[in-house]
Image (cartoon, rainbow over all chains, first blue to last red; front, side, top):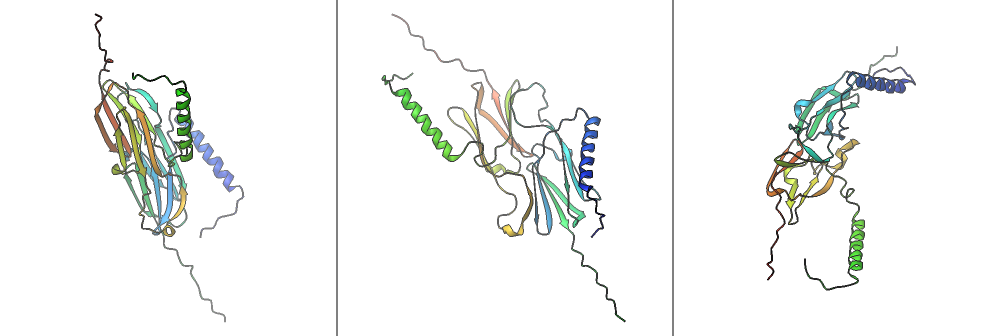
Length: 144
Length: 149
């Protein structure tokens, strides 16, 4: 258990921080087109956290995965248009293209060094192992 | 045009038929919500080909069925299933977040008359189904000239 000082404004600070981050990002890349919020399932099975993201039409090379020290998992990348020829007339345009990013705060018991990821049929599978729960240490104190 | 006997109630009849059809669809639920999943599709055209691409993440190639009927309706049918093994108990899996939707889907499009329906080519890659048709010159409607004696 980590010691956290109670700060009732903690949540508000993190919201302000992420808004600031988004604004800064927009200022730095004004031409960046955001494509979508990829749909995700997260579930626990076999002492592992499983994360499944829908990324149809995204190539493996265009996705980056990272976990920081605060156990925040970031998945970002870009969905590029697959039509190399610019001379196309569109009749229906339902698919969206551009950059995407999703962040998830992972629980404390994740093993950051034991992460597996694979890409299959337009799905990104991420498997993160759970750490063995540490038994609280008991210290015998003799009463004299 | 077929020769049809004059029936003053024909329009009323066909209207009633259409209403019945609509009510039938009501019972099944509306098209989009039926099955819960409807893939996103782009249709585009360049000088030689007509392209149709559909986003089908996590769907096995064998689960997708493509067909064209006599009237030139192309339909893409399939089912999106959950990835984890069925034999696992529900209790062993606890969901933290479930945004993805599953179920069967159908999307149907009327092909234009300037494509060669037999030239259909389909491939599945990275969760995207890509269909292409060759374009041809549209056939002029057949006219039979009748000589007047």
